[in-house]
Length: 236
Image (cartoon, rainbow, N blue to C red; front, side, top):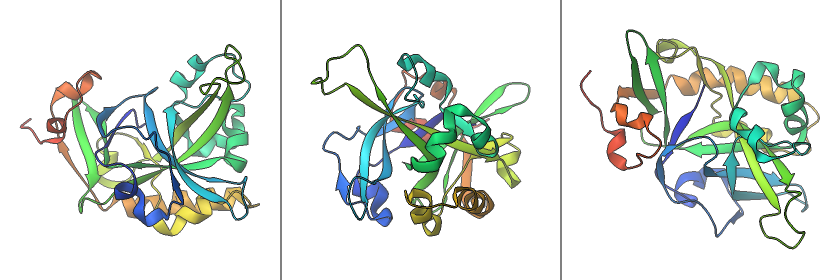
């Protein structure tokens, strides 16, 4: 699973290779301990224009489907198992047309043994990580139509079985996307969603093999702690 991650840079510094057309002027600040329900910048292709406009937009972490009665359901839908998407009403419609990329600097995972040890997992060369995600728009029935917060954009991060060294830390890992698969993943017009998903699943291990990890302070376990020093390695 992926329950905490890091975005140390924002805007074009983080997503330059994805060729974003429009960056929101309301992007969240850098964060070193992002938890579910936080606001995070995601990349999506808006089909309202022809050709689609690639946007970098702030979104709430935890998918809230259009049929939800309130936002609380999103707190349980911050991850989605990639092998089960088509069987889950929560994610099926989003998989068809509302796929996103979640850029990150790295993420935390806890290795469970005699005690839980947090690891920071990140690209060895300092380049950004791209997680495959899904997004939804939810209309808040409690707000008037002219309220700017009437519509809530939310997302989930997809996961798959871990491989190699990452498998020794946790049995699940985010579904990583490489740049070669980014356009196909975001394409709103594709009719072969299963092929696109399978290609992403198959390519993810190659990205995973480029990642480094190290043990970090247990302070990361408290969501109120949010500072760059959380990324620094510590002795076990």
